[in-house]
Amino acid sequence: MRDILAFFSAPSLWPQLTLGSGILCCLAAGMARGLEAATSRVLGTAALIVALWMLLFTKLGAAGPLVTLDSLGLAWQILFYAGSLPVFLSLEADDEVPAALLLGAGLGMGLMAAGGSLLMLFVGLELASLPSYLLVAKLRSPSAPPFEAAVKYFFAGALASCLFALGMALHYAASGSLALSSAPGPMGQAGLALMGAAALFKLGAVPFHFWLPDVYESCAPALAGFLSTSVKSAAVFLLMRLASIGMGSAMAASLPWIGAVTALYGALLALRQERLQRLLAYSSVSHAGIIVLGVGAWAAQGCDRAAAAPIFFYGLVYLFMSNGAFFFVKASGLTKRGEVGGYARMCPVPAALFATLLLSLAGIPPSGGFLAKLFIFWEAVKAGLYLPVAGAALAALIGLGYYLGLIRDMYFDEPVWRRPSWEPGAVRWVLWACATAAAALGVLPWVFSSVLERIFS
Image (cartoon, rainbow, N blue to C red):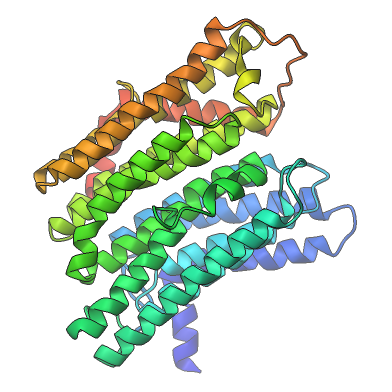
């Protein structure tokens, strides 16, 4: 009993306990008719803000064999929770979706980041995944087939979970422990490689990407932003954690090539897309490839803690870019590329914000996206990964075709004369905040570089 109380009273778990309390409050609010939507939104937002505030004062260290919070886990927890906030702000007043699901996903990501053993990583992974399946089923696009994307997402996630569980079993058979340490022999290395494949599955890297475009296109734009930022950030953290404990040499050496192929594949497929959410989905695949390249470069340099800062910076910039782009789709009501034509003449301010985000996604200087890609490519070059860097750079050049093409359509095509929609309220402020942050991270990088160096030192 004393050990259990000591476990749950550990300061490193206070943010997760806050989210757990928020889940209970949201469920209690859902029992009162007419209050569940608006009240749950307020309670969920408050719980996330309090959890973020607690992270700023959380002490690093171990709280038993299952929980160990280091600088890497602390930094990525901030990213998980910050990426979850926009979804709460986008919920409608008459939306019946319980905010408890979003908090549950955040709780799972937090437990994964604080995990001190493979078992804790697996529990956090599942706790983050199960609410996400339900959210895709609940928050779907009106034109999407009911539950089709959720079923596809569920089976893809179940396959990834099976790979991770099988990898854990092989690791335990080889080492007799589920601790975060390298396992001896081919069996242990195979176990770590299988768990790495599960992380790539969750990330949507090639060849495990097949579920991603349909899911992102079918769900609500705000939820697609959450899946492309917070959920993918959790997969990146899992991949980094596995690489840091000695992922199989063959698997670690293949990460840069997987990243380059993923970046190229996503960029080429995005060129052919007409629907905006599907285009952004393949864009997300391409960006996932660049960040996998960064993880591969980090692993090639011995997983030095300070060298993890460029990967986190990329995740931070992408959080604003992707959320902002999906929120533009939600706020504007545009669904196809053909509807974007001449949009800047009808709604100049939203078009300017969207153009700012597209320039950052394309990596045009002096945007945050440019610096994020530059830092990743520089670390990969330092690791001697010249060919994968060339492939990822080619993918970035291909990306100019669809990013700049959308800007050209908005500003130089004839307008599609229909009454433009522009959603007021919190959605507008999220778009403003994302566009401003994406630009500021490129123009004022030194403001954030000192913070990142302090976190990862």
